Figure 1 (tube, one colour):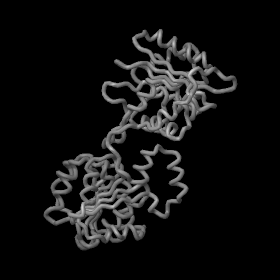
Figure 2 (tube, rainbow, N blue to C red):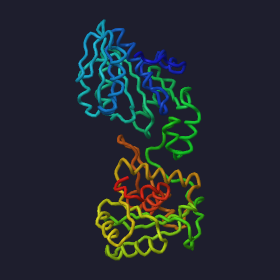
Figure 3 (cartoon, rainbow, N blue to C red):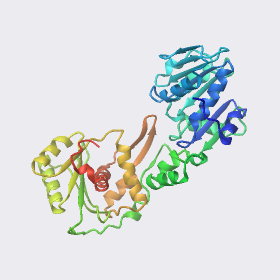
Figure 4 (cartoon, helix red, strand yellow):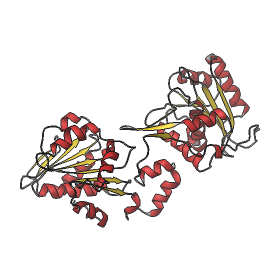
Length: 395
């Protein structure tokens, strides 16, 4: 299977004379195709080429494509080492950057650093950049942005007209004509503004910043709401940990509005469960989504024994971003009306994100709380995904 031909915008990058090329691109722009084309051409000209991805798993896709593109004329292939030798002495090697020390000790003509924003800076500075020195090798550094890490600094370097060896390009998803515009607009409608700008517009955002915008604009729910017959209500619960508070939030799914918020600490677990049960029965909730981490699990079991419809949510680094971003989008697009509770509004306004090599980490600033944020996010998730009420143990 040949490598697809490059588009005009990709050809501009491919033929640019800069030694170090940095491309900040949106999802599905075509960075893999560009990298494959440059790697394949260099190897067929007798050059030593490495393709470096953040992890072994992410390196599999380019390895498979390179094998298919060269299977008719390679002279040697080592599957375990992901190495292909071509006629004329050129070679292609696909590597993982999860152990930077394994990238040392070889001279290269070209290195393609794939998803560079997720590769440790150590791998570039201490292993890959030195490997290009003795052969005056070149680099294609490509990635979707992830905060302002070393990839951002490389992009800034390529944007400086006084540094002639470096050149940068910003390539949003919409530059790929194969992606229908309606797909991009659908993503814009579904994603929080910050996520869309990063993933589709290829924008570099601050490493740490506030998450929720337009919070006070959304604080329009009536303070003394009453139960409305025929409406469906859902309850989210974040149990206290260490110095935190147990928080409960109730959502009227039909009105798209908060109707109740409770927050308490320094009470026995039995007293806390009694308050949760009373709140659930007052609003006749359809289901409760409660965080099961730490002390959550035994309290959930106790509430179930009282006949309450509790679903456990096990918070992980993988599912927490989706939980929070679902609420971010709802607030930004006015899908939810918040109670004008000052504690809730302050926690939402103070909530932050931090971009790390392993993804986005959400949480309250040090010394502050996020109990009402999590309770609200759980209630909103359940209200907008009612299937979770039917016994899903982990979401």
